[in-house]
Length: 340
Length: 104
Image 1: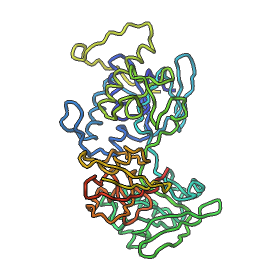
Image 2 (image 1 turned 180 degrees about the vertical axis):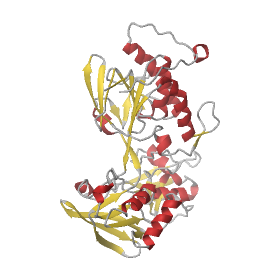
Image 3 (image 1 turned 135 degrees about the vertical axis):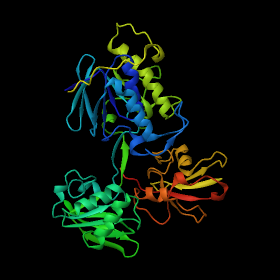
Image 4 (image 1 turned 30 degrees about the vertical axis):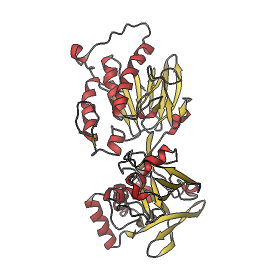
């Protein structure tokens, strides 16, 4: 059991900086994120893009900003649960929530700060008719256990690194691997592209380019995938498994079921402290909405800063809180991470 | 200038777009509250504004980044584009596009 003062859902820039502001008030934070690394969108979507509107930085690469934030919050020894999605919350005492992740990790906290951006990143599912009927019955959107595909006939779709990497890896395990891609060039790492081309030449991978999967057929389990090719028109491939790998897309996910007031996929907050309609739960950054809302990192930093002041008063209603500038008080970090 | 957008229920919408605001097609669709996500904000880094161009306006060719990102879209055709990469200019007056299907 992990215990913390503020549980932050989402380890994007706003969630990370909130650790700093909470730390100045001697509040300890734990972050949960569905992605395996901190940084949220900055790491997943645009690590190499420059950002020009972070005060004091004429230009900073998104990935660098994440690195800098991690360095900035290091003194406050935040805990991280990465690669796990915040699933459900329950009240387990007065001013005490327990959050459970999709992998069963439990975290107890008086305050939850939802800094989940656009939601949690999940594999993008193709809008192929009836595909949901075959989910886990031949259709997988990610490879969790490669052994599952031993001696199977696989169809992998996509043109990025994950499609290429899994094609290479699974070509040693599966009976047959077909890789289908909409054009002849791939956007993945050059090494991987070369390797896949090599495997295709030696017939270890069946590469079908300028083609897309447009249909799935089966009888309870997946049996065939319908392919539309530029050169050959529509045809059917009998397969055991279809693995579409089309990147990740953010989804609001289970947070939508937590009884919060939600307006167009965003959580309504009171701008005095970014609190939601549920006591002890705040929402900051891109995930919240209010009159005049702007989805900017710098606005999220401000929201997190005000939010922790309110969280402090919520946790310690009788304590006196006197605001101190870092120029006066410095940054006094915590001793060590409390391991669960 | 005017643009026609066919949504995923095949309903046509007439959009009036200013040419002096440096808008792109994704942004215009969003301002009319059409179901275009524009997750990445217009950097050609997601595929959530995938559309089909139905008229033969001369558009600049898709960049390498746009082509790469179309790899993450579904049912990509020869007339597929990312709306965020189509600038709103006088030249595209009368453009007709259709929103492509999106995954869940």
